[in-house]
Image (cartoon, rainbow, N blue to C red; front, side, top):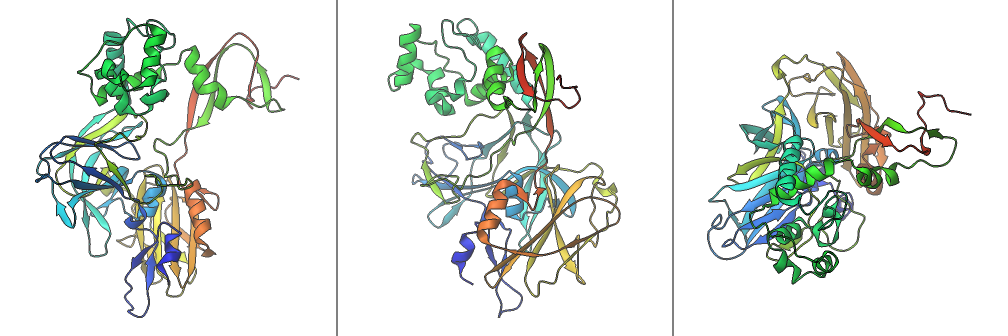
Length: 486
């Protein structure tokens, strides 16, 4: 089979078969995850921001020599990426709940380099889980990663970030800036989406030294012309300070914030699903958004989301992703895979679900069969024993009552097969999968939409939104619990 046909999938990797006459292909592997490549000067301090907003701070002297060093990073943070990577969330057979994995390595040409000084890492997320540990990946004989050597680390939960941001605003900014009204300076709310400040590095440079930044920025010059003065410099501010300020401002719900955040995206159409509503306070539910975006492969040209390796020189300005509110902070001192995980509570005491999976006869096609729990981002491979796919110990230890997805994918002789089924974990549970033939284009499409044959591969929650309604009639989506006036 030609490798070109597999490239279209973005997630096929060659697997050596036990039968030397045949070649099977492992669909889900770490080769499916794009590399992000950065070129750094080892004699300087370097700060790298990835496509998912993770930050790697590499201090001067971390790598020996003066020649440039290439840093390669892979991130596995979304549900689709976890499935595509095929990385189990298991530590010596015990189930883990993941909040993100990544791969880090450094090299100069063909020589791999280990850091001589620990690399500081911040993995941002809007939802920070208590009790998370940092695991190191250990590759086994079956090429699967086992997570070992857990260590505790720092976290910056969203509520702490909001409190820190409020203190900075009140202490340094409040005399000249209001969150929602122009004063001596412009309103601060949503400033991270204006002009050059979409790049957090520019926002920090401006706050540290407004006059120097203004000399290079027409946008900053226009601000001075409008408000008549140059902002006071705060040279001690750091990138973390900017992030917590954004966290605080984003937590506010003033009149203008309401208009910006809610009105456009949630405005109801004028049809039979709308009602007239009185003033007061209304509440409604909307689906929660992902904290991290999936790679976008629809664009053209070279970009870090395309799945191709892109080189970024950290001595030049470059586009970076948006701000996040909470962070997992830790250090790494070696190349390799890392995982932010925690053990299930009372893992050893979890009842055995005795999950057994059978699959339509696929001949000698190699199949990846996995069980995925979206609410915990837990991926467990299933192994074929006597014609039945089971866990590594002939049973699967799972929390009863959780929604899970069982998936089988394989490819052979220019044909691709898949099967997926959604179920709720019970005891015992027998699941039968019926393979379907598909194409690389279709598989690529369904993975990018997070839905496969109607099965949602993400955990979907409804978030309660409380909205203040002015004392005038407005249109909103109908509440089926309320009688619609005739």
